[in-house]
Image (tube, rainbow, N blue to C red):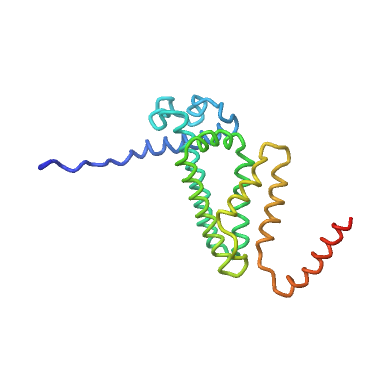
Length: 214
């Protein structure tokens, strides 16, 4: 309409931003301990804010779950960006993958809580898959460019393998197994020198023949 002034978008106050971050940190801790059944009142107490403040930022439990989930995904994405400066690209890729396993291991209760909202939101699932795939892609591309990793595997392949390794996160001792499998997986991606690869072929063929004869 003629003569109307443009709408002014106001930035959140600094204390409101701080309160939101405190609630997210508290939710991460409380959900990690209590899972999806943890009360929002417990989150508010842990954050040192009133329940009204929590609801102003996150009107529903699902909204809080989603915000925590997005924050964790962003932090994993940020870690990938930081690791791009690491001197050894394969070690950087391995470190990022291990960080995901460590995340699941130390926050099992929160993983269960976040799974509820992630599985119920197609958009959120697409966002997290895209963000994590891009994170892997940057590390993988660097390792491929260095000639250290084979070039016939995609970031999506790596992410699906990682998800598979963490699938049994509710079983005793799963983390040790997952980290061992992760190392086997990453080592299998390495490009071997031509002579070493050729020398390994007869041994692999002999092993297969022995298994058939057994």
